[in-house]
Image 1 (cartoon, one colour):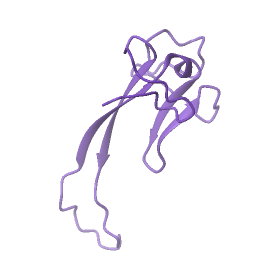
Image 2: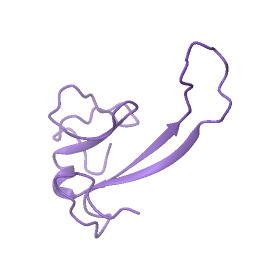
Image 3: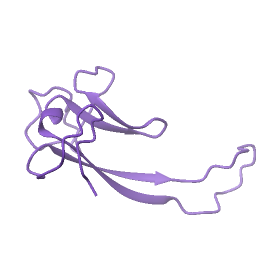
Length: 104
């Protein structure tokens, strides 16, 4: 259950979903053999899990969440130019001015 802002520098308690921004990520995990030399097929189905995270209103104004396969969940500022965030329609979400409320 969500209890607080996911930003480790904030941890404001969650009181209402009307404040801040809720994120939903689908995490797919698979087992990888220690020896990748063999090209044998995987012997199990990937595990899918939906995870939810919340940024408080103050943090959501300047930050977003990114889930990367190798580093996991990261809280990143919108000003991070190494990211090109887009919504499901391909609209850029990197600048706050171009971002409609409750989108992306």
